[in-house]
Image (cartoon, rainbow, N blue to C red; front, side, top):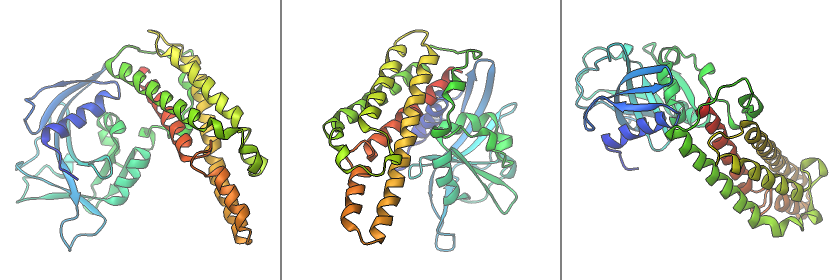
Length: 338
């Protein structure tokens, strides 16, 4: 993959933080490295100095095959941001995550062409979960950070480098409690640039989901002939109707200056419930088909796979992925307004 310029790497940092509802104000020239900026959100404020490089694989045959690194260039020594936060970051296009290293372990003058490493396992885990840590031999704890967790990492950097990230993880999409997010006791903040942009993202995801539903409608009436066992999934036509109804509940609220968060929560909860149900049905259908196949009933196994896992059906990847995408976008919108 192509290596990103410093300007694009700085842009990634700023975009990731702004997408979490923070305002980013540069404190240095666009081409300066390190890049210095201030981030604000309500009463919270952080002054940040960011060093960043592209991550690359390994470091020769003597290095472990599952190791990635940043090669530090043109920086003889890291300087801490007085009264603020200093970031030592790498960016991996391959994994879509940042690596982050603790300046407390890299405060001395740097040698010739030094590098700092992190393992593939941590990068993959951060891609799936948002944050991951790796204990290193020098007692440093390296951190891998998905962009949607970067602002959280900055605000809680010391905790992260002590390996305490459990409380910093954003709940996975299937664990978001939309009813709690729409509690009448909460105070909401609407109208920020990031919040308005996320509204458009939610609408785009809902439109994509509805297009997938329209595409499979001709097939829904035929699903009854070869349905897998009843326990796997309710009537596909009913679920498709519920998806359409949920989208219709959410969409008009996002056009309002003060959206009804309770209505959006109800629609999002419905989409989340159906997504989890269809995902489970697809997984169980695959297991059921495999069990049938083991008993030599190849034809019946093909029917089950076609009904449950097949590309065009309600259970297929297109619908399941579109539902997850919509749920994730609504969850992020709620995080921006709280």
